[in-house]
Amino acid sequence: MVRLEHGRGYLSIKAVVQPLVLTRRSEEEALRALRDELEAVERTYEGEVLREPLVIRGDLDARWLPDRVPRDVDLVLVLFDSGSKYLLRRLRELGLPAVLWQDRGYAHSWSWDTRGFLSRWGVEAIAPIGPEEHGRVARVASAVRALARTKALVFGRVPAPNVASEWSFEEVERRLGVEVEVVPTGDLLSRMDEVRGENVESVLREWEPLFENFDEERLRDVARLYLAIKGFILERGADAVTINCLEDLMPRRFVTPCIALARLIDEGVVAGCEADVNALLSMLVLSYVAREPCLMGNVYFFRPWPGPGFPPVEERVEDVRRALEENVVRLT
Image (tube, rainbow, N blue to C red; front, side, top):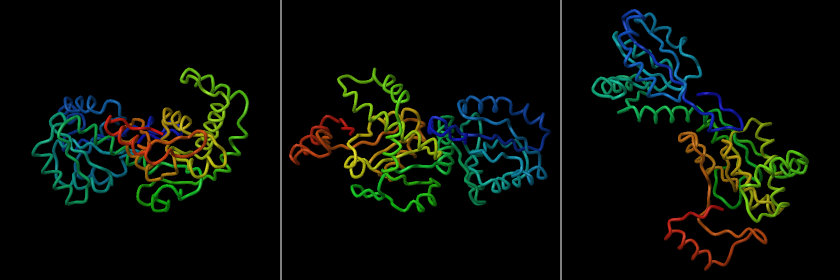
């Protein structure tokens, strides 16, 4: 996986793919024989980081295979030219997904038989049925590695009293590799109060064309909140954030973070609300696999003005019924 760029998150993810040519022939002969296949590999994995093919010649070369594959590789792409099954068995030592390449990316009998053989040896062997599936496999492999290098910030009280969310961050890290750090709302508000001057005005000028009939002072508060959150992201090396807005932020200072979170998402940061860690983890998985923005929303009608609160039950039920009938999701 290409190193996650803090502040760019899912926009910086690419799979690092290492082609392995397993052969008895000389390197020159093997590469010449597989020239068409290697050209097809380049076309299929365009947009990912494709390493130069690594030629493993015979059993002796295979013994040293783990020392020759770089540590940043997400998956190895196996092109079997000739040789013993020992060459395949050594893939177990890499601890990486082994994607089997055959016939310009289209799998058939050799791939399926080899997948079964490798599985018995504890190798995560994958035999994509065609070039498009190769692309999906690369995205999933890079997303898994990216999760294990991800840090998320939770602003506010945990667990948030308004959501049933995972509160054991040790369990989150153990299962997914995602590090979670809590930042008290008071620290965020203090940082927000420190944000002044040209930085705020610059953000306002950038945002102004996006809005009509807006309250400039309220938007200025949102810009300060955005810059405060972004400062924590860069300072703590984070890739994702969620904020306990309804239960913690708004009672202390009535500033809605929705626009700030939306702008962070545009920049590649996975950003959610309500300190809902479960939702944030789902967003991370979706954004990392799709390499596209992911939004968190509620299907119920929320009235943020003149203060945090909800309309009467009858009005909320009617709004949800109308939203479902019209196939429209209310994003709040």
